[in-house]
Image (cartoon, rainbow, N blue to C red):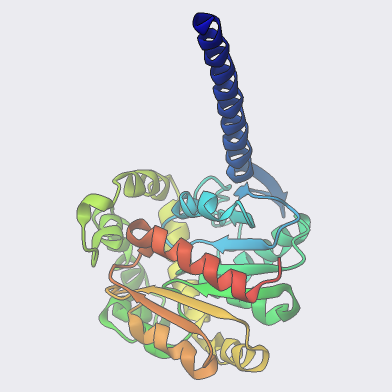
Length: 322
């Protein structure tokens, strides 16, 4: 009798364990699918734009705009960390990542044009409102969008992206500013060192606390794309076009003052390209902005990605209606 009861309880326990395990697997599958990153393309002005997308499309949208010399690849870990609650979209600019790279004599590589193209990209994807994450080159693109369409911007996250003169008042910019003043071949060629493997590694590793946390997959992804035939000329054109951004700083600052978009500033404080002076500038126009100076370098996501994701989730929960 005891043997039959023992078998009964054993069978019941095994069945309950199987049901529990199946439920856990099902729940894990649901969570996995909600944060699954999809890799897509869409055509804008005849150019194929690659983008990463994750999260429910009826959730608030986050538009992530990358910096130089990377692409949406810089957001590869951030996207799934946010996609359970947000619709996350990260395009590659033309000439970067997996988007098309039209020859420079057939396509205008300027920040004005990149912003117009990304504006069309958002309209094609029917992104009627979004929070911006802007870093490096993403800042002048994103701030053009925000100033032109303030009603579309729910909030802004700035990570080592500049909108103030003091943010580029440092030695890194000396040779680039010389090129802005005088567009000679000599000044152009002086910038080619910024496109080398050593320069790319430096951008990822300078100012970080622990080099062992910085994956060589970063420059391993970026440098072969920079080295594509014709791409150096494209990047040199964009170095020159960056000179169109400082004259727009007063317009962007006026947008900040008038519209007071909620802003989170997460900034690698050891960045020699955009040092903390640029981060503090935002507080003049947005006194309620939230500023965090992080103990890392230019590509802060590489070393502080988990902290940035936590700060973003808390900030967005307070400021963006779900």
